[in-house]
Amino acid sequence: MGDIAVAILAGGESSRLGGNDKGLLTLAGKPLVEYLLAELAVDYSSLYFIANRNQQAYSRFGFPVYSDLKQGFHGPLMGIATALHYSEKPWTLIVPCDAPRINRQCIKQLINERDNSESDIIFARDSQFKFPVLALIKTTLLDSLLQALEDGDRKIVKWYFQHKNSSVEIDKYFTANINTAENLQEFEAALVAKKAKALNYQLLRGRVPVDAAVCRTAILGVAAFSGTGKTTLLTKLLPLLRQGGLNVAVIKHAHHLFDVDKPGKDSYNIRQAGAQQVLLSSARRVALMVENLEEKDRELAELLTFIDCANIDLIMVEGFKKEPFAKLELHRESCEKPLICSGDSAVLALAADSNCDEKPATVMALDLNDTEAIAAFIIYYVAAYAEV
Image (cartoon, rainbow, N blue to C red; front, top):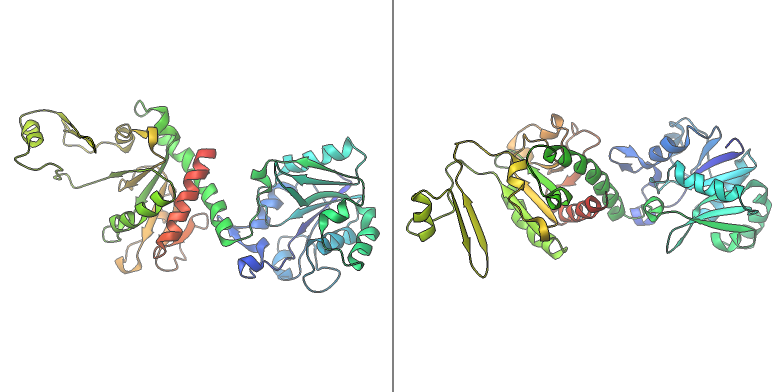
């Protein structure tokens, strides 16, 4: 790998992200480029950024920063030309700053293709589309690229096809990039889901016999202090989640004196007579009431076994905030309560109505007053949970 220089392209306008610099956008508390550096900086001694703005911010990562050869935003082909211009190696690896899942294995696939072909350009694709901004290019092609730019060419693939080239199929999970605020939220939800599945597995493992369907089902708690509005939010979220195609079950912790039955009803009389379990069934619903023989709260893991997960995509849990499972915290400044996430690593996302400077950087931030955004996060979360 000593014959390869690495150029991370971070010079775009990011118009679909409101002009925010993509490479410096934070994902789970880290700038996007940090994910790439973690994969690439160890293996490659020659690494640099191509960035047209915020150069001081990029220089803090400890690598050279160069702006495009021509001032202004002239597209990724100009960024590639600039990368080749500053390369001191026979080959230059081009990596986009907005695809933080690119890893060593992806790069190894490009290198293997180079070593087993006569191509001067090797670029990535997935099962459907070309992904030309991830490419390994012979540095001596710089003059050809500069001439193409002089002729007004702006399409990467058009220039690639003027030379000996080949492509490598890389799973679209790795080539997925962030172009919009929705993309960023989807990526964050996927990171949350990965952590959540590990947490929830630990909760279920070995505690009680649990059906495999429960283990596969996404579980997300809603944790908050009294008065924050947990139930109010849930009642607003559930129709949106339903519209998003999710079938949701809810487990709610309640006061020890609660009762769901009415005095005078047959089921009430049967239960009062001594039945420990009463199952009611009609054409529209089934209800199971179980008497606790001891006045003791059941653990969440046990309660999860009551859920029929055959047609359930998500189990939302209200309460049980001290149990070690994945949670979304709700925080309302007017309640004047401390953040739960400050002392509970199982809180993976925080929906607040104010800025919370003490929030851990790795905890995803949401707006408590934006119910649709919270619903979108949960939908992304469930989709990612199934794929982890």
